[in-house]
Length: 72
Length: 223
Image (cartoon, rainbow over all chains, first blue to last red; front, side, top):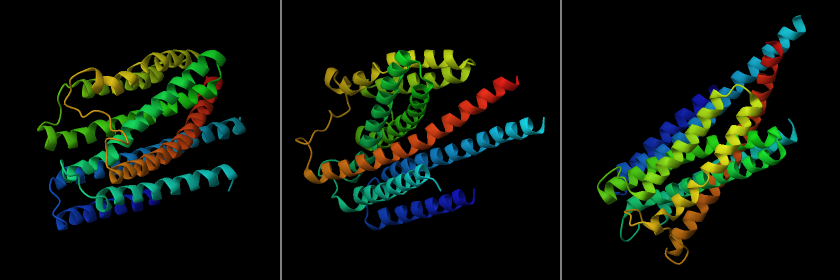
C-alpha cells in the first residue's frame, strides 16, 4: 500500500504541474484539457490499484483456506 | 522472481513510460489544431481509449466463441478480464468525449447517434459484468456470459459506423489522409501506449481471475 500512496502523491504533483504548465503557456480551454488528461491517468491508476487490492484480498482468502485444511 | 513476473514488470514499465511520453507529446510538443485550438489535444487520449475499448470487446467476442466451441474455462477468464478492462476504457472514452464536447458543441451530452450507441455499448458490458456476479454456477455463468459476449459485440460495428450512417454532431472517423502528419504520429504514439496499458492490465486481470476461480473451487469443496 505504501507504493500506492507514493503513486498517489506523484499523481497529485503531476496534476499541479499540468495546471501550472497550461496556465503558463496560456492554453485556452485549459480546464477541459486538464480534466481530460487528469481523468485518463486517474482512471487507469485507480483501476490498477483496485486490481492489486482485489488480488491481495483474494490471495489471502485462498491462503486462509489452505491453513484451515492443513489444521484439520 | 519468475520469468512471468519479470515480463509483467517490464510490460508495466514500458506501458508507464509510453504513456508519459504520449501525454507529454500530446500536451506540449505537437502544435495546437488550427481549427479547434488546444482542446483538440484531448483527441490523443479520447481516440486511443475508444479504440482500445473496441479491441477489448473484440477479444471478448473471440474468447466467447472459443469458449462456446471448446468449453475451456481459460477462454472464459480471458473474456471476463477483457470485458472489465473494456468497460474502464469505455467510461474514459465517454467522459473525455464530454470534456471535448462542452467547448466545441456547447453541451456535455447530447443524444447523438455516436454518443447514444456508445452509452448502449457501456450498458451491454456493465450488464455482462452484472450477469457474471449473479450466476453462482461456474459453467452456467461462463456459457451465459459467452452468449452475451457474442451478441453484445454486434453493437461495436454500429458504434463505429454511426457517424457514417446517420447525421451526427460527432466528427467522422479520422484517417491518415484526413489528418496532419503531426497529429497522426502523436495519435499512433498514444495508441501504442494505450495498447501496452491494455496488455499490462490484461496480464494482471487474468492472473486475478485465475485466483478467483481457485477460491471459488475451494469454497465449493468446503461447502
